[in-house]
Length: 352
Image (cartoon, rainbow, N blue to C red; front, side, top):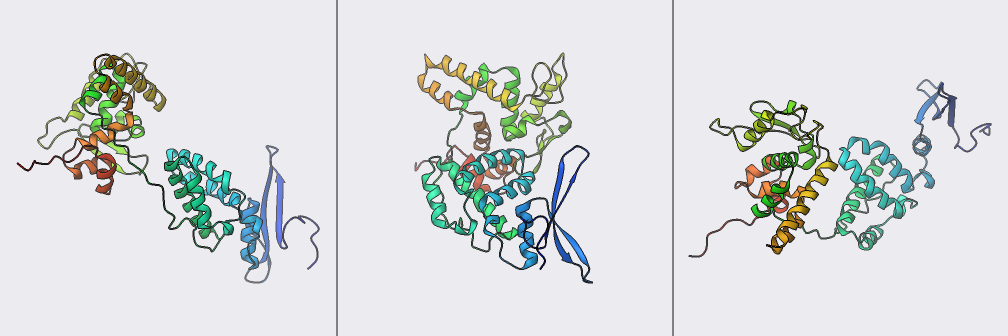
């Protein structure tokens, strides 16, 4: 084969094409110098990522993928580029933190050199045990995608690796704790607490609710995490307004100088965001704990443990029927509702 006169850094029959765009930016992409069915020369696109292009080139040449293409850095990069955009915004954010931890250890490692023992060592050395479980779950998916993409034919080394034991959060915001914080809350925080409790939805799903999602009979919700659609009814089986329906009606009846598109809005009409919700809640909780400290220190300590995310489990715990609680929370498996969100023991009769 005649030696290359250009692109000598590339393997045989792999071509680089570049051109300068109107913006001044240089466009670059790679091609395989192949043949079509009739034997005529044909440039087959390999993409604009050199590592992915080399992997595809190896498939055309029927040769093993070069080791420098099979390092985890390349696979992590492709995972972030191709898989991250398909995930929910919050999941992308969490995965971003997780993959940063994984990169610090595995970035320069060849994928075929990673063994189950390496995975177990990573798990044991991580001080954040719960986060380690999430990181290993992500790493396992990265390996599965790498197998699909052709970077390795080896078994997923995360398979069968024991996870760290997790103890679900068991704090229950009883009436005393709830009332103490609620009494110190501003109107918009009270609205957020009421709607979060009555709908049983996650904080992010509560904050994104809009009045346009509410009609005379129901609130329409699409959960961020699962993509599941719910219609939460505003009337009971007798046609009477439920507590949720009454809350929504009360919000709509208020005489506001600035109208808002959201049922949970600040006095200036702006929808409440996550930061404002957190600061409002923390301020009210701190004030409530301080007020209770002198007369009831034990209550004060319980108030300090209360987090806004505990409202969803409170809702699940106070609905008698597990099936109803599971449906409201959007769970397909009642066991999740039972083990993670129900924080009050089952009511049972004594022996006598």
